[in-house]
Image (cartoon, rainbow, N blue to C red):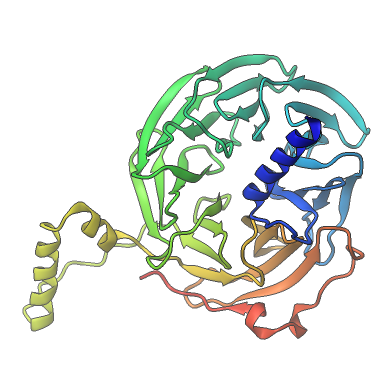
Length: 396
């Protein structure tokens, strides 16, 4: 019975990570902490936490080789980590990794699918329930029961303590977003984000905006938390549906990254475009433009939405598709970097030039599975050029 349970959980982990049976990677789980200063990796033999203060080395802050770890979440740059193992999938352990001690543990009625934490709250997501803990003493403050079936544990917790909101799917058939106020323990707002079920969601650093993607994976939307207003809409592509694995705002909310089960990471610019002065045009082109604008008013909603959708500002192509990834854009050593951690066992680091037509290049690559010395950097200046650079694409 025990081994059947472990096998079933392992199948779920493979579906979450995008790994196929027989994959050589030992990585179950990858995630960045709230301020992108460290990377947490769950493996078949435990978990590791890496420092991201420099791109020249990937320093190991902590390594644990005791359990098969499927979830590991660090609280900012503190020593507090929340850990779930495959051998005890209903048990959450909160540990102080520098002391090597377990602070507390809690057991739940079903498998823990995800854990989210900020400076005042810790949230545990089960398939049909969410438990909100006070992070100071780990007491359960509130339980959201009978949520729509959420087999992937999709939820997000704002990292901002003043706007401490929890977001989760409000339906299993359409893309409704429920936002819950974790400070006052009451519902905040419901946002009808998509026509199809949700696939990915995230808050910005201030907790004032959210980004969402549906199971179709073609459209990504940004909404205001205050009133649910749609602020931005981006089209990832029309040719194929994909599984969006990760959405992430930059700290200043100027850019949004999106990764999926394909080889492409998209970066969208969220700055409001500067309105050009309106000029009367009496030429043939002016007539056509006016006619197109008038015609668009009478098109069905789905067609006018396509006209209004922007494309990605930059596209980055990963060496290996088909794996679950966590991505983030952050400043390291005074330069903007794109970090992509993949369950293929690698951390990819790109230099970013956010200007129009700027260069984007893969400059560092580190192994995360312990198969080689982590201080050994793969020099990508000598790597295959098709993997070392990507072509930036301006917004249409």
